[in-house]
Image 1 (cartoon, rainbow, N blue to C red):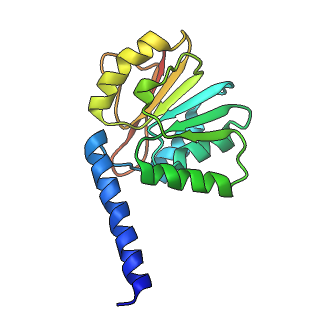
Image 2: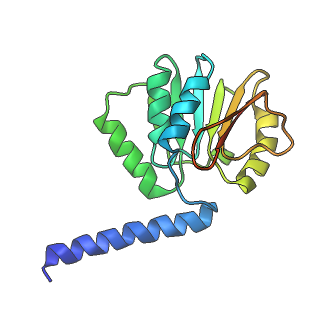
Length: 175
């Protein structure tokens, strides 16, 4: 086997191991929002300006869509897993998007008080933990958009069902 092939295999193995380790650490793998859910989400989102946070931005696919949908807003995606984060950054550097940034930070350690809207696709455990943070930090009137998993104890302003295999739900909350 040539040295180049061996090196490529080692790099690929290291990337896979990194994703597995961070999946275990975060409690969920970085899963992109499906195209049908993304399309429906963008159809129903209200008009907003200001700062929009995507919590757990993964590979950046939803953040890029939000960036195009809200060209006057500042979109910030937070991701801790290094491989999806660096791929997001690479794609951002290759794009023409000027209102989007990615930060490799745990959103639980970031103040969200200046958010106009928070968007997330997280697992139930993170949603339970997130609810208290949102109550403490978001200004009244801030929007929270979650798909697939609801915020326990919160009453959504609206719930939409996507016409997909899983009948995915999109929840809109107002702080």
